[in-house]
Amino acid sequence: MSDAAPWIKLYAEGQPARITAEYPNALAMFEAAVQRAAERPALLYFDGSLSYAELDRLSDALACGFIARGVGRGDRVALFLQNLPQFVIALIASWKAGAIAVSINPMNRERELGLLLADCQPKVLLCQDNAHEIVAAALQTNPVELLITTSSLDFQQRDDARVLDARLRQSPPPRLPGSLDFRALIERHAGSQPPPQSFAPDDTALLVYTSGTTGLPKGAMNTHGNLTFTAQVYRDWIKVREGAPVLAIAPLFHITGLIGHIGLSLLNAAPLILCYRFEPGVMLDALREHQPEFTIGAITALIALMNHPDARSDSLASLCAIYSGGAPIALPVVEQFEARFGLYIHNAYGLTETTSPSTVTPLNRRGPVDPAFGALSVGVPTFNTEVRIVDTESGATLGPGTAGEIMIRGPQVIAGYWNKPKETAAALNDGWLATGDIGALDAAGWLYLVDRKKDMINAAGYKVWPREVEDVLYAHPAVREAAVVGVADAYRGETVKAVLSLKPGHTLAAEEVIAFCKARMAAYKYPRIVEFLPELPKTATGKILRRELR
Ligand code: AMP
Image (cartoon, rainbow, N blue to C red; front, side, top):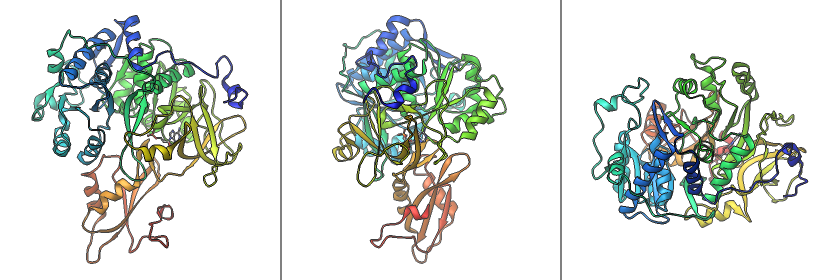
């Protein structure tokens, strides 16, 4: 990257074009936080709190529990959890045991969970006790050596009125056969310390699953170097100060939560505020109680905060900055939000494959709106990052103002996909990531997203791959042909629509299709709209034309 690149000028006011990662790995970053801020709160969960020293002790004990069960260097530890303290404890314990943490969407159903377990073959699976049916079913074909269950109530005080799953206290779900209790395992190893671990920047820290055109999940290998660099991007670009509380609006399993919440707070030895899962009223309560200084979340979450009856003009007053990424942001929403709370939403663009941020709106700058595409800019390339636009046919680099596929190179780009050399080679070339997004740069270096090359549907930041939903639809005995497309939706941005033709002599109602899918996939994926056609449009070679249906 040349230092003369136009976007460097854009944020060079007081900022360097490049930064150097301070820590070789995420564990060293955490240990430095414990060293300098042992008594500072690390995790706040409703009325429960854990200091950095306690987080260190609990993760030491859990790591010893893992090691005693044979977990070692490079083994996978899968986390199937909501935004709970246990997520962070187990993440750090995985690294202390030399392992790779795998974050799994807690909305997944047994089929989806089973696919991930088969792919990464973890030695350990950590899950909530209320997910026992899904887990038990998925484990039948994909057993793990160590199954740990935990309760969402474990780190709350008993008298907290905001407890989300209070029913669990009255009648805890049945214990999964062969499982160990999270707290009991920690108690058994309390006071023990695992042997020291060191990781090189190239070592894999996380597997974060994304889907793809084939519908099969791919584990993005986010390295320790990716993670420490992007945590620092959040800190240095947005100027989030040491110890500044961070509110976790995004789910922790997603790359935004992993870096923009966990990574950033570990780097800054800061309290991370966890609220189980996104409920706008609970978030507003947490904002009042804990006065966070930073958050990042999907635009639909910010819209939900804005429209909640408890929201007041000063509800977000403690925040120094707010960022949003993961899904398109409409300018009127940014304006309404600013009018309501006095905070400008800074747009940021990234992928799981870029370990969260790759282009970011500079702090206190307003992203321009492109006159040709009408889109709000997703920012400028962040530190050490190159962005190039290429012609989707020829691969030639295109100049400003011309749309093509967005290519990204920088210290945040993943090493590849777990055990998927073909997919890795297709996505990565000489360090450049082919994003599958169509966009354009302007002459000043601002990036605009225009379209998508990939068929992916973006429903409120949750990515849905048509092929996966179609595969489930084809399992229905009445379905002859199925195509799944994204259609515009006022709240979710896009929503999932299924277009079906039926086998002769069969009838099927839309509600039956929806119920069939709902039982087999995470709630954000199942079709909300179903349409029946006698025949689906196809190419001469018989390929269904999804684009035409869209
Ligand atoms: P994920 O791997 O779930 O983070 O999804 C990455 C995809 O989200 C990108 O390839 C984009 O299509 C989309 N995306 C991310 N950030 C933005 C943004 N600021 N505006 C619009 N779409 C975005």
